[in-house]
Image (cartoon, rainbow, N blue to C red):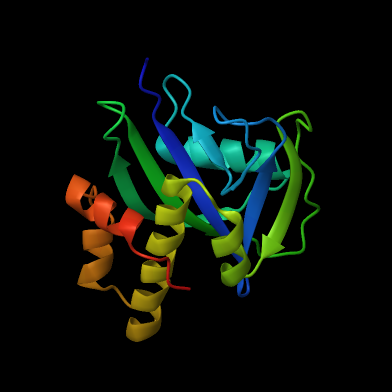
Length: 169
C-alpha cells in the first residue's frame, strides 16, 4: 500500500469542536465520526491540504492558526499526518460538498466528541488537542516550550501510551 500523507484539523467555535460523519463504512463496516481531514494531494502542502479537506467536508474554511502535532505512521512506513487547530470566526453554513462522503457535520462538546470518536488516531488527536489547550490556558496564550515539543513527531512509545490511556476532556 502506498503511504498517503494527510492533514486533519480540530475546528473550534467557543467551547465546541467540529466533527464530520462519514457516509461510507470503514474496513470494519462501521460508519464513523472524525475531525475534518484526509490525504494530501501531490505537490500540496500539509496546510493547504487541511484547508481543502475542511472546505470539502464541512462547506466552510476555517482560519488555521497553528500546527499542533506531527505523527509518523507505524502501520505505513513513511506516512506523515499533521494536526492543525483552526477556528470559525462567524456562524458558517455547514454543508459538505459531497454528501456521499460526509453525511453529517456537527459542533459538539469535547465530552461528546470523546464518545463519538472510535478510531484510535482520532482519539489521539482529541487528546493532543486537549493537551494543547491546557498549555495555552496555563500560559495565557503565550509561547510554551511544551507546544514546541507537541509539534514534533510522537514516538511509537508515546502513541502506545495514548492508545492505552483514557482521553481526558
